[in-house]
Length: 393
Ligand SMILES: Cc1ncc(COP(=O)(O)O)c(C=O)c1O
Image (tube, rainbow, N blue to C red; front, side):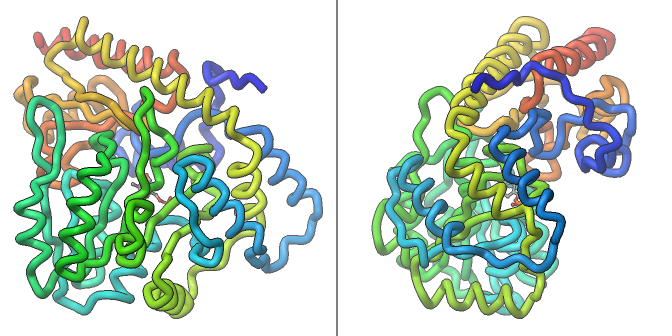
């Protein structure tokens, strides 16, 4: 089937967080929403059919997670990333954000440290603070727009007795970086040496652009698998985040049991009746969608990069290796973060995410979601361009 990603679909008044909650979340209800990681594309027809079929049954009592859920997760990981796992390593969760909270509660005490790598997905930051644990920020290094890991600093942080967990974002949101096998080996070896468990968030691992390959950290070595949990989901890949289903791979039975027990204690885990049928359809019937989606996203980011370079050269982007989230370096505009928010959101009426939401290292940056029809992206860029010129940049 051929998908039409150019189609503009009205999303207002659908109880969409991205479109209907933009005033509360972004500060201006008139801004074109290009913030949260949610694409403006129809999801695959096979997912729609699976949801409709379930809806037509007309009884929506408590669901359970069937064995097929665990098997399709294993098949997907083998097919996409060449990682062979056992189905009984998989834990069902209603999203990946709940895993951060649960892992903190199961594996750390008050005052313990969780290592993160800012600028990073903000939901890795909040649960650490919310649970009374301490952020240990192994900030990413950035040279000429290329991000890398400060391994010396990572080792220093991991060696502290208080350090218990590392939240790894792979591929990395917001900087769009795919970590190499060599990077992953160095991270995993440091964490093993000091007994720091890795929570490897690989939610963006299917959205790899320009021939980049994703390596699941735990697939490299059994010892790494034993010292980690890896988080996967079809939610970003197939634009079904609102259905809430993800598969967490925890090969170490002790870690898996502790994680499952904590989820039980938290009592928040039960899925809705549409989640698993959609998940199974996405992971078994929608490869053609993903192929076309990646090709479309590659064209969008190429268009965005060329537009910036030719018409707004003071706004720069690095190499986009994964995801549909572009990390715009606006430092050359010489605006404070408040003024940057005003420039994009209030003047240009483009609802980007502010870089500072991802940590102090995000100062001078904004994140723009290009998972939308090209015409929407063009509209946003033209709105920004008008302000860029009127500010005299
Ligand atoms: C890195 C990363 N992890 C997790 C999530 C969201 O996880 P979920 O919706 O499954 O809770 C996002 C969404 O943007 C993300 O970018």
